[in-house]
Image (cartoon, rainbow, N blue to C red; front, side):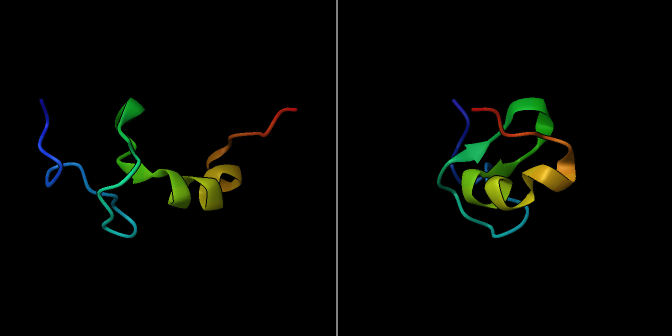
Length: 44
């Protein structure tokens, strides 16, 4: 299991809700703010 100290958000340094998929290492809050710039689209 990966230690929480190792999985920090690269933007805000938070350890909660970190998305590790595809090597992003960004928390869900920072992802929500930057998703459009990264090329993700919101679908209904």
